[in-house]
Length: 76
Image (cartoon, rainbow, N blue to C red; front, side, top):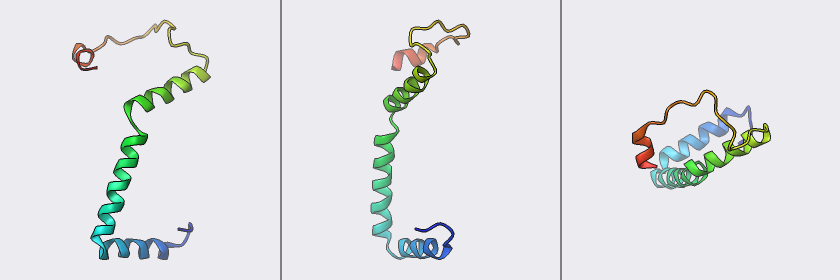
């Protein structure tokens, strides 16, 4: 869809409204993509990469560490 062409967006939305099965398929596919792409593990890996790029070591002391929630520790 080219930017600055609102007619294309309107046409796409009308097509989805006219075809609920297509809308459901696209929605299910989008949910699956997001679930696979944004897992907790992947998010943590990416954060570790960012911190490593900044020179922060994983075992570095944390001067302002917040106390861990005991409930969170039990579930993780």
